Image (cartoon, rainbow, N blue to C red; front, side, top):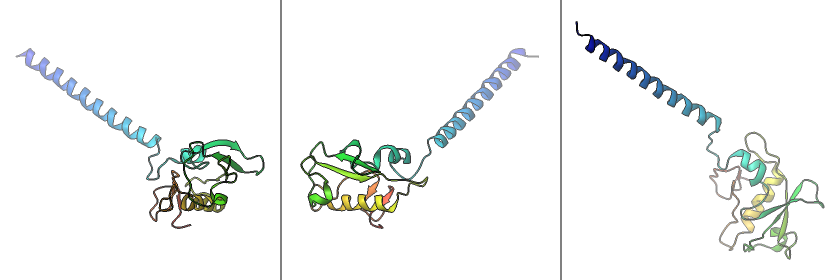
Length: 155
């Protein structure tokens, strides 16, 4: 009887089973990770919109709660991005380049309250850098097929 062939077979079987277990572990851990990250077709993620994205337009800076209006946040156009809309729509204080936006209460599906949604859509549609361009606000879209949270074409 050839013991070396039997030992070689056992060793190869052991490494084969070990290899299969490693593959199963990698596949399961990747599935678990993708479940934890909450993959969604909506971008940006809902957590971003709740904490940061719904407060101010892109490239504007959040300055804090508005002391004059409860439930509003003050945003400042610190980079002096041009706005072509009327100053009353695009700014509350044109000299300071600030605007107060209603705090957006968002549910678990990412739906904003109608008043905040309408204010953001008015800003996006009327305060772009040129009359032909819309303002930039991640998660707020003026297109009919919005991948974000506010679809201004339907508001």
